Length: 194
Image 1: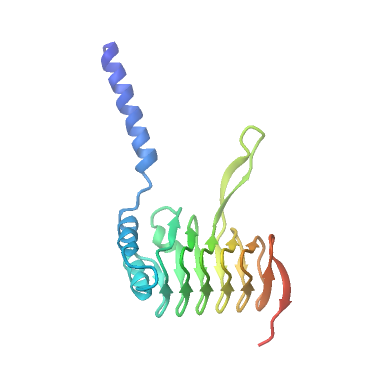
Image 2: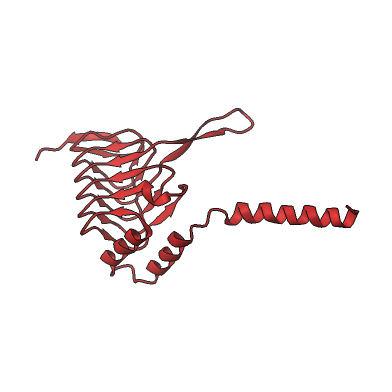
C-alpha cells in the first residue's frame, strides 16, 4: 500500500471509530418518539406522553401521567425493559432517568419536577484515573411514595412504601416505609402515621 493510500485508510478508520463513538448510542425509536412528544406543550398531553413511552416499549401502568418529556439516558438494548412505572403515577416535568439497569416505580407514586434517578456509578480507581469500573445498581420506589422537587436518588436505593423525600434531597441510602427524609445526604425526620 502506498503512503497516500495508507494515510487515507488510517483517516477512514479514524472516522469510522469517531462515528461509532459519537452516534453508536443513538436509539432511533426512543429518540424519535421522544422528539415527537416534545412537540406536545408541557402542561397538556400527559396521558399521551405515557402512551408514547408505552409504544417505545416501556412498562407504564394505566392512568399514569407524564408531564413534559422525561430525559432517559444510559441503558443498553433492550433499554425499555429497564424502566418500569406502575399505575396511577405522576411523573413531573423535567424528570431524568438514567437506566443503566432497572428502575422500578410502584403504583400511586409522585415524582415532582426535575427528580433525577441514577442507577450507575463507578468503583474507586487508582490515582491516575479515579473513576474505575462501572457499577450498576437498581433503584426501587415502592407504592405511594412521594419524591420532592429536584431530589436525586442514587444507585442501589429502595424508597419504601408511602415514604416522602423532601425537595432537593440527595438519597444515598434506602428509606424505610412511611419515613419522611430530607437533606444532603437525606436523613430520616420521622415515621409517618396513617
